[in-house]
Image (cartoon, rainbow, N blue to C red):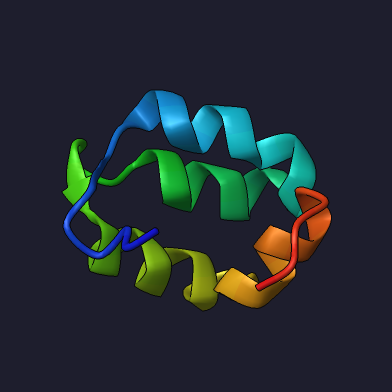
Length: 64
């Protein structure tokens, strides 16, 4: 599945926050994005708070 063309909504991110195990400041940083955003923007924002795509997929129970 190629997500690179998928827009990411605030709702998507809110759903993922519990899996990321972030603190309030990191969560606020992600929620402050101007949604919807391109997948690449969301991925970069996740990485900026210490969560890469492989880690997120692992926490969701999948394999990268």
